[in-house]
Length: 122
Image 1: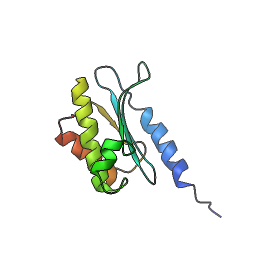
Image 2: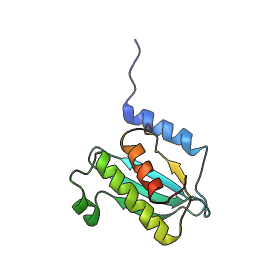
Image 3: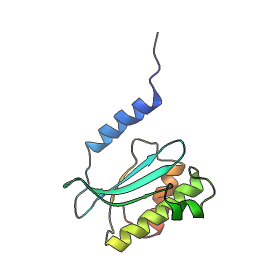
Image 4: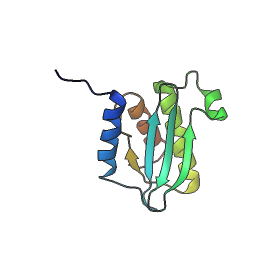
């Protein structure tokens, strides 16, 4: 009998495989995305020193005030705009996109497209 694997374990292993292929540097940091059942989180990380340069999430008061729900496609798009604006203010123009093992569709794609529209290159 074949046992079904837990979805979060599959995603976690997929994320570890993805992380072996790329890392954020000072010139081109990593835009890491995580989504839970209730919220979304985005960070721009310099992996050479292990430091988060910019972070945004749907838990922040100013972000939460602008969106109706915290974990839908509209919230993801707004979060993409917020993280891109914060990155541009810090002088970050190009990043490596880390989808966190999630499939590139729906919320993850909306966040990436919104960040690209605001001027981030990846």
